[in-house]
Image (cartoon, rainbow, N blue to C red; front, top):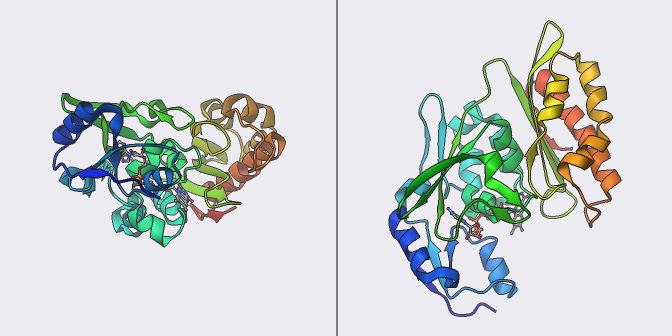
Amino acid sequence: MLRPLRVSQPTSVTEASAELARLGEEAKVYAGGTELILLLRLGLVHYTHLVDVKKIHALGELAWDGKTMHIGSAVTHRRLERSADVAAHLPLLQQAAELVANVRVRNVGTLGGNLCFGDPHSDPAPALLVYNTRVKIGTHSGDRSIGLDEFYIGLFETAIAPDELLVEVEVEPVPPGVGSAYLRCARFERPSLGVAVAAARRDGRLTDVRLAVSCIGPVPMRLQELESRLEGATLAEGQQILRQAQRHYEEVLQPVDDLHGSVAYKTYLTGVLLGRALNQAVGANGRHGDG
Ligand SMILES: Cc1cc2nc3c(=O)[nH]c(=O)nc-3n(C[C@H](O)[C@H](O)[C@H](O)COP(=O)(O)OP(=O)(O)OC[C@H]3O[C@@H](n4cnc5c(N)ncnc54)[C@H](O)[C@@H]3O)c2cc1C
């Protein structure tokens, strides 16, 4: 049962943030509500006031400026999945968006809600990490911009303060000639493992390698040390490095045994899916799907 709630619908970031600051712990930002309403219904969180951000025009914008995609935080997964600009410039994000949940969740669930919830079981997060994404955060006293890698702090914990709003997600495509692939494995409603890879091959050697993994640790992460080891390797050597990096995945990603599988299973699967995604990125230039 949902307890009675008051809902305000501010029309600017300044107004919404001031409302959050005034109401303190009583209030929470409400976008699509797919996570928030579930938690309220289950009695896992309690708020008396929701600040609905969907009337803030800037948060619903999706625009390509010739170099960067500007995605308002209230843009839904469905819009990302169906946008011709996203498909053309950010195929990894398009691939991740179309795998989220089901069409009912994608129709209302927003990219901002996905990121701000801080659930590591996120499809868009590894795709966005590969694109070196930055996020714009706003309050009643101004904006700040940070990298998505700094945004994730811990399990269900982000850099957003209680009176701040995620305003915009700024995403730059990979350089021309670099292929990409997103693969995931899903045993339950949300993904159990998601990997995003971008890479190119020049003169038989790997270059511009970017690797990101979500789900198995507390936060989605780039694997920069492995990226450096893959630079200049042949594809076969790269595959071997990825398959033999189980100890590295365990140290860096910090997986735990849970319903999604044991640590050994998760790190093994990470090597397999990263290897497949690398193959696709440099070969078929970006096929995707459940792994
Ligand atoms: C059945 C089911 C299956 C799912 N499967 C998948 C899946 O396969 N892959 C996947 O990646 N995800 C999955 N999800 C998660 C889904 O992506 C998220 O539910 C959705 O994107 C959250 O967006 P929302 O707008 O509904 O967020 P809300 O529920 O409105 O908000 C979520 C949290 O983010 C905060 N928030 C929202 N917007 C902002 C903002 N602009 N600024 C600051 N804080 C904000 C809210 O206060 C709240 O704490 C699933 C969810 C469900 C219910």
